[in-house]
Image (cartoon, rainbow, N blue to C red; front, side, top):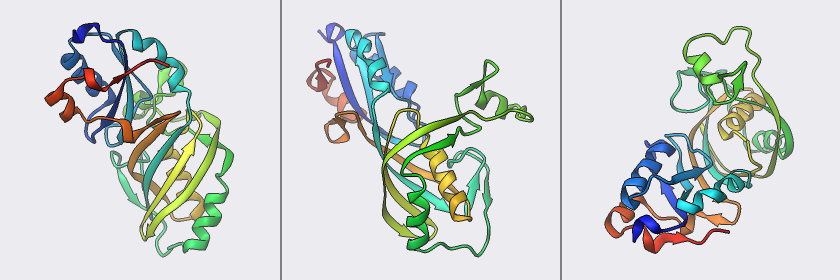
Length: 229
C-alpha cells in the first residue's frame, strides 16, 4: 500500500519548480501528507532533492547538514540583484575579460574556508524578518547582511568561454553557490551572477540514483524508495 511506505526518495528536480512544488507532487502520487525535503533548491536550479516519506521524514534534519556537490555556471561581466537569473541584471565593469590564470588565482582564494555574506534575497533572518521579504519591500537600508564562515572542499573549473564560467564545487552546509559566483566576480573585478545550478550529491547520496517526477507519474513511487539510514 503506497500510503504505508516509509523511507527516502531521491528526486532529480527540474527547473521551474520550487522544492515545495515537488513535495506537493509526491504527496499526491504517494497518497500521504507526510512528505518533506532536505535542502531547498531554488526554482531555477535542478538536481538532487531528497524527500522523506512517512517515517522517512524523521531522518531529513540530519541530511540537511551534509556536505554537497554542485555543477554551476557563472556569467561574468554582469551582476544580478538576486545573484541569480531571477533578479535585475546589470552590466559589470566593461573591458575586463579575465584569462584562465586570473580565474585560477581568484578561485584559489575561496578554496578552504572563507567568510561569505548572505545574498540580500535569501531566507536568512535579520530582526526576525527574512531578508527576501525586506528586499522585496525595499527596506534594506541600514540592514547588515549576515556573514558566515563556509567551507569549500573542492572548486574546479570545468569549462570557460567568456562570459560563461562553468565550475564544480563541493561545500559544507549553509554555503550559497550564488553568493560564491558573486564573490568570484568581485575577485575578478568584472562582476558575476549564477545562471545555472545543478546539485549532484548530498552526503553519500548521488544524482545518478535519483528519479524524475515523470517516471514517478508513470510507474509509482514504491520501486524507488530507499530505507532510512
